[in-house]
Image 1 (cartoon, rainbow, N blue to C red):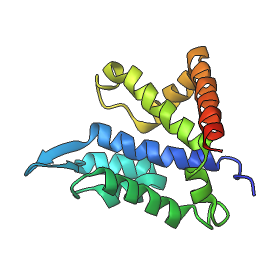
Image 2: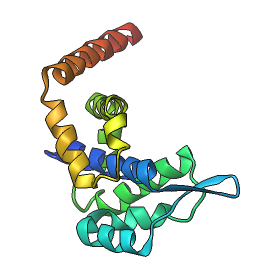
Image 3: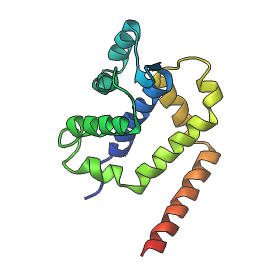
Image 4: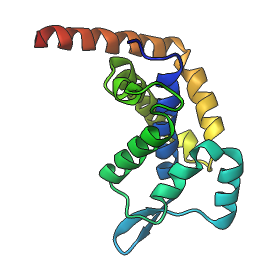
Length: 160
């Protein structure tokens, strides 16, 4: 079964949103890091990104770790996408796909390349997705995609 249209983008966007939360809304308390939103930030987020609010709530006021982030995102995808927005088994197929790996690598690369700009102020998630989408259409980004695809093919071939 092929991955449904938009499943990859929709699921990647959930990971991107969770990353955006950690990028701007981290606070240190008692030696741990937490997602901390002011009342106003929470209201704005609920209004502007209601489809992701449940995810924001699930990580808020809990000590952050890579495991918590991954668990929160995957649980969110399973509850909200698996068998509802997309057919059963779609989440696992997307997360295990080469295209998903490439998307995550591209996003991380984009953040690294634009960190100075992104740290100037708190930019909205919609703005992040807009400028990231524009960057993905650049020649450099497309070259990176092709390079990653070739690298993955070579690694897959080496495994067989």
